[in-house]
Amino acid sequence: MKNLRSFALSGLVLVGLWAFPGHAGENQKLAQTGFQFLTVVSDGRAAAMGNAVNSLSLGSSSIFFNPAGLAEMDRAIDVSVSDNQWIAGIRHTTASLALRPARGRWGTLAFSLQNVDYGDNLFGTVVVPENISSNGYIDTGDLEPSAFAVGVGYGKMLNDRFSVGGQVRMVRQDFGDFMVPMPDTTLDEVSNFKKTPLAFDFGTLFRTGYKSLAFGMSVRNFAAEVKYIRESFELPLVFTLGISADLMDWLPDAGFEQSVILSVDAKHDRSHAEQICVGLDYRVMRLLSGRVGYISRNDENALTAGVGLSWSGLSVDYAYAPYGVWESVQRLTLRLSH
Image (cartoon, rainbow, N blue to C red; front, side, top):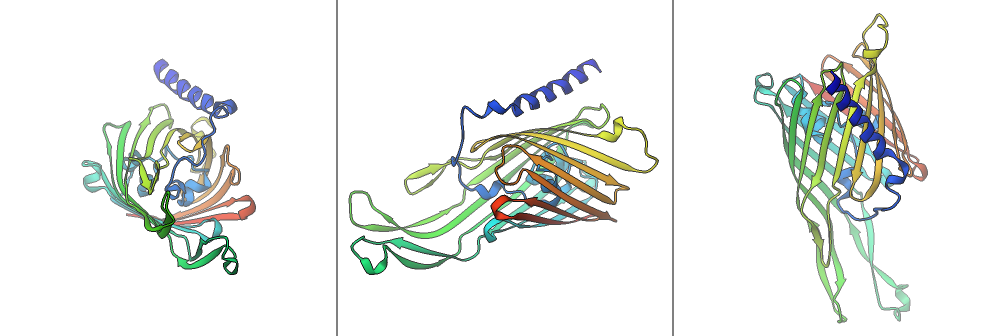
């Protein structure tokens, strides 16, 4: 028990040091990565809890956060579909499917899909300044950029406390064809801005055995560099440590079934200052949930909230986040477990 408490205390200290305000001030990391759609959270429960779900098991949706959570799925099959009304009219849609045959003896196999609808966009190209009639540019027509990712993942419990998981994804982003000026010439070249790299996710989940205390660790979007024309960049690699517990383990029995899940994640992102995400999920009778969350060092969406309803294997999760000048972002997730 002494070693267990020391381990838990070490985890809390690590999270606290990560949250120290001066930690990221010396090295501001901005605009260093591409494929940013991979960082957008669409799951209703996760978004309502401020994305602080790295040490929680979310059924098939775990594949979008910590694949090790797949191993703790308690149903033979789990399907989820999420719709995210993102900023600027952009729409994110995700879906996941997890299969757990033989009561998890062989682990859990999962599949994921992530799609982005950017809508129609009118593009133009710069022309020579002396062409006054063109106002400096000419329209080149509508462009329909797209982005999606498909993946397959696997999670396995190595014992009754420790789980591991991973996922490999084919990621694609297509911005269409553009005229690119050639160096030291007056010629332009038509270039295609479309790339399809592979990305890898890894995760672990450890239940301490001390009440419901759990730790999670994940690395997401590990991939080789991507190059458009002459510029190369990396995918948005993020390393996350998380800790969670049911506070009812330390509170008096209220006489009816309820849980108060507190979850805290510390995130180290390749192109963003370090963040602390805090989420609280209060559930009554495994039926109705109320959730709130907080994300540090976020300019627009620091606070989040949402509700959830579950009944006979079917659940609906809704999340709302004020988003400053963009007003708000809303997510809705439908999940079916059997």
